[in-house]
Length: 111
Image (cartoon, rainbow, N blue to C red; front, side, top):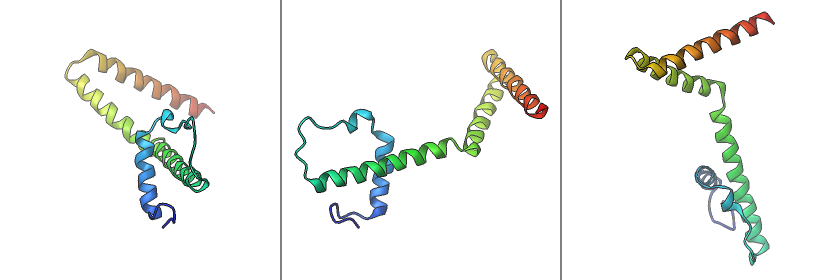
C-alpha cells in the first residue's frame, strides 16, 4: 500500500491498465502552471510509469506470435466462409494470402 494514495499495488496496476487503454498523448501534457507538491509529482510519475508498463504489456501481448496467429486464423476462416458463399472480394483476399504464405515458405526453405 502506498502512503500517498492509500491503494495497494494491485489496485494501482489495475488502474494503470485501464488508463493505458483509454488515455491519449494529450492527457499527459504538463499543466501551464504547476502547483503540485514534490510528493504529488512523484506520485504522478509513479502512476505514469505503471500506465506505461501496462501499455507495453498490452502491446507485447497483442504482438505475441501465438496471438497474431489466432487473430489471423479467425480472419482467414471468416474470409473463407464469406468466399464459400460467393463473395468475390474475400476470394481475392484469400488467394492473395495463400500466395503470400507460399512465397514466404519458399523463401524460408531456400535459405
